[in-house]
Length: 504
Ligand code: C2O
Ligand code: CU
Ligand code: CU
Image 1 (tube, rainbow, N blue to C red):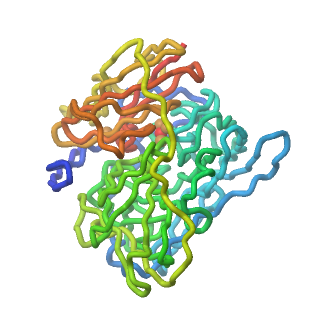
Image 2 (tube, rainbow, N blue to C red):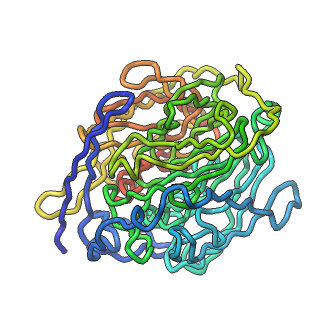
Image 3 (cartoon, rainbow, N blue to C red):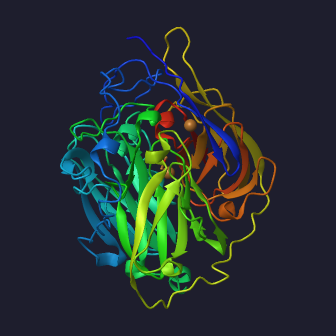
């Protein structure tokens, strides 16, 4: 049981300067999967499969000709019941096979057999009840990322649903519209489970959003972006902390797909569902992208840019007007961030403008009004850091110098108050980000300055490049209980980079 660590470096120029990206760390020894209903307090944060033989380089780029697969529209789930003022869904988690790389069937973990997972459409004020049945071999936990839900339905890391078990999650949807997503959160296993497919989309809408003339229906596309690694037989390879080998880019589960679009406006709900990869997205011609929303729904005003940055777990709601491209032309969505060869990871997907179309949609100058962040009852600082193991010990993901301990409360929050959290990335060469459960917060400052327009709305996840800090304002007035906060680079949270607050 020897811990090997890998230190691989790469530098990338970003809009904000130079971003150093290194892989972090690699855990030491295989450990048993967490069993259902067992409190896993193992201090070493090891991970199953960490020492499996290396299967060689990612073969995705060799197996796939870019822009030959078609972007799938993820299936929208139908409720099994709409009685009692709520929509009830039945979801089964099961192993399945997906056609990801052409000519191969790839084993994946799924919600209802779909890779990536299905879309749940919900309305504010109307609860959704999801009956989840776990037909996998591992315990799981289903978390609705960005939601305001009672702790029993939050799908925290220790709130496990064992193999063979069924559990009902209740989502009150007592919050404004937002593009949310749901994913596995079983402690130590979330990174592998999400990587293998346990992630889906949850689109919550409300009157404010529906009153706007934004592109809708077939012109409103959820697109989940991520990376992956394949072996020569098209099998998905998961190794913890492996960003340099995940060089196949998937959009809605297909590698480098194309999508046929009409020459008109489209709304794209972009989600970065990668474990570790940051994207900096641009149209190949540098054309304008109008960002209208972020994690917690619409911005107050649209903002037009040529670049959209997304760290793992973040969402950006954008409108692209393809009418500026001639019918018959194509435009590639590119990514300027490593790691990986730019000829592969630098390309994401392609839009093929195939027809003219009428376009009654528009993007109003004013999208919504958000209250100004009020006074805060207290301030605290949260320090994120990954640390190499010494003397053969496993690397650790730390928050305020400690790995996650489900028995410990790291932040005691007074119910009904607002707080300002200063979150610091204490690594000089490893990016992190920061996600709070339960609340949508505001970004007050990034590195001591006002945040850019893309971070001016409601957020639940913020990126923290090496050495960066952000000041966040959050109000804890919805539910009491213990909720986690963590780095959303899931390989890091699986290494312990997670903590919990108790709102009481
Ligand atoms: Cu998207 Cu605690 O997770
Ligand atoms: Cu979350
Ligand atoms: Cu991290």
